[in-house]
Amino acid sequence: MEREKPEALPTNTLLLYYGMLAAPIAWIFDEGLSYMLNQHACSTGHFYVLHIITIVTAAVALSGLFVAFQQLLAAGHGNDDGGSTRDRAYFMARLGIATSLGFSLVILALAVPRWVLTPCD
Image (tube, rainbow, N blue to C red; front, side):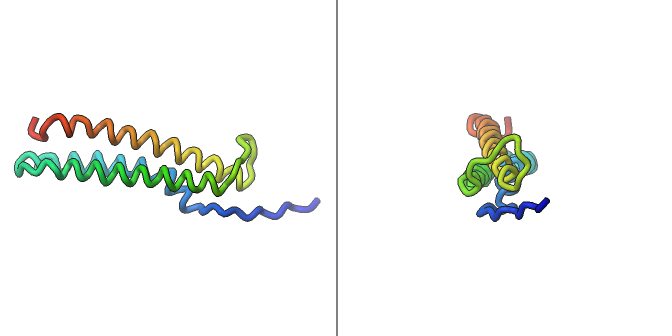
């Protein structure tokens, strides 16, 4: 029995992990920084700081979406039941797209109260 040689993929493992983890980490930073700077924004009246945090973290989350989509195109179509390198890259890219979309939506949904209410409320 001969072993199969691993197929060379145009995907990058670090980019696959970035696509999967960028949005959840951006959400963590959005929650943490907003909580931390809420008192400062209330006392100084600089409400724009909270909006900037939301915009930056949403951009990071959406960058994860674009990176995951690029890696999905590079991986090609994989098999959901398989265990090859291509199949794992295909799964990770699809998971990155799903998590990026989900956490981007969460970041934007949590920004609505920041736009409607003041930090002092």
